[in-house]
Image (cartoon, rainbow, N blue to C red; front, side):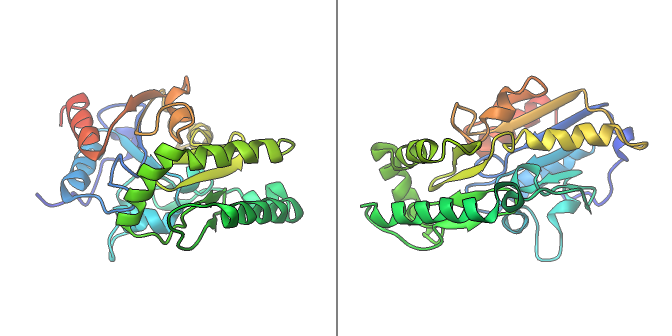
Length: 268
């Protein structure tokens, strides 16, 4: 079945005042992999009924690789796109106001934080290290003890090692103590890394865009907000939005589980 090319205007979707938001990694797609044709088609079918969006910690480029194509922007497949937890945001392909981590923390404290992180990683005795240990994003930094250049096989092996030896958990606890005077949140997600961002800039940040949109002349007040994610436990990077009183949270184990739950809930 071909992907639909047109959708009803947001105010004419059959399920009124409702939006469905999705995490990306391990919810819509396998970690750092592309969405299957079946998942893309399910999202297109869902969008005929209700507004849809995604909210992910990674930047727009990575989400384009996972959910777009070489000739089709990911923004054409969702009504709302919230890369970096919504610090960068799009509505119907148009860019919304953004925020900057570097402006918030200041250059001096940022350098102090990154220097400490790199020294800590240098002293870590773990089986392998690759590259890109600190990735700067618009709204946060992503820290990976093994390095984001690790292969899929290396990521899988590191995840097992990390769960057993609590490398990331210990690292986060050290940072919390060292930089207790900075109001930062540390969120462990995916297989190999954790995010560092100002408190309040977790995935609930995207909900502010929806609230701001409701105040516009052509905006919609979304009184029902569904969220599907896999890291919904305390300390996971979906926890805050999953538990937020403004959302109805749905915990999934993987993309297949997400696919099944959405199909059943929305009768697709």
